[in-house]
Image 1: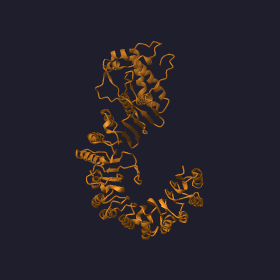
Image 2: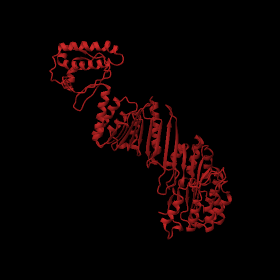
Image 3: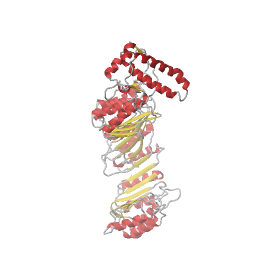
Image 4: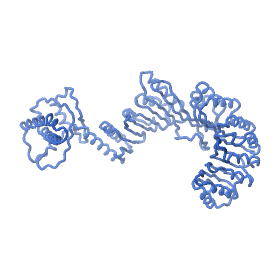
Length: 612
């Protein structure tokens, strides 16, 4: 724009109706050179544009207006000094902007079009087009991320940032909000933020903006944090740790103020599960009664300990676990629920405790129930009552009936009959050396043998109870769907020879309509050498995945037979991935390394327990 200038300029056109100027003589005396410079730049831009599409439109509608304006301004302004750099002559600061506005008639409802006012770090207030606005806001965001040691991968639209001060949080918040306001890219930006109390993930998709946020504890949030949540219109919110009674109003306020919140997840100790569910359901109903339209569709209560394996009993865990998902439908007060329960607390459940209250109110919603020893007649009756009214959702049942009497067993019979979707039953028969437990086993195995997927038989004096069960239930035909079988003694006992054939048929290749075993365990069981050979040779290793002979008299002789049987299987068909030989006679004065090498030659993918 000046003689010898080599400064690169980038001009973007935007639609704007302009302003009426008051005191035009004084205005042009003060700002004429600045406006004239802009006209020169516009003239160059329109000249270039005439060489492209639709040149007549540019010439007839824009070109002559610019030419007339330049001619007028050249008459009323002083000529430029040849050494003056017009690009640095006017940098408009706050004071200049205030004076400039005094010359403009801004009360005429003129819309600013594509112009946006910014405030720079130097307190300047330029008006820029959308392209420059996005560039400026994005650069500011990059600078803030860089100053905190974070990373900004622009190609992947991803930010990772750790912020430890409130000031930095506010700066980052302002920067990211400005980017979203300036951004027209439908791919959006993915963001993960963590400053000790919350994390944030923002995803702009074509279906609309999704903002997911994770909070450690509700009680730790400041008023700024709550405003942060509200301003971002959070759509998915997760609270890691249990909200206590003092947090109730804060949770309700979050539900009331976040009109786009469609998914809420709370990590919760089981003693607070029922209270939290009732709180959220009640808060949503009040919003509806007040004429509101809550967006909340899904409410999840997860375990504070994280993901729970509901199909595994762990002796080191003694807490009860309840996870549930509540699904809401539109603006209706009705809802659906799906609940998973694992009872591992060894204390007997009594009337009025948290588990009893949940069974009474929402027992109908239980789809997975792992009962363990705490399950008694009281809970069975509550479940019976709840499903009598609402029906049963039960699909998976792990039943340890050791504390159930005939009353409790009858109640469970009715529940199971009301469970059309129940397809997985695992019977965990404990203390089978007691006659009462043997009778329960016979009753349950007879009633539910066709649906039985897993059977664990546990007791002392195996010579007294296993022959009885073997005589009562023909192998395989009684349990066509069973894929897992365990026989465990509480102290080392000899397996009656009459039972060896029954077990051998159970582990062998069944008929085409029967399920092959994937899991087989003998624990603290003593077999005769020939019985070991019979049993091992009967195993179908093309399907068996988990084999356990822990704490038995399994020895070197049986180990050799096992190696030969596994080696005889086509390696492409071998499924064995776990072999437990811990505390067996094999390990007495044995070279564990040599044994391990032998087994790994024929079962490379298997994890070997006891030979490390």
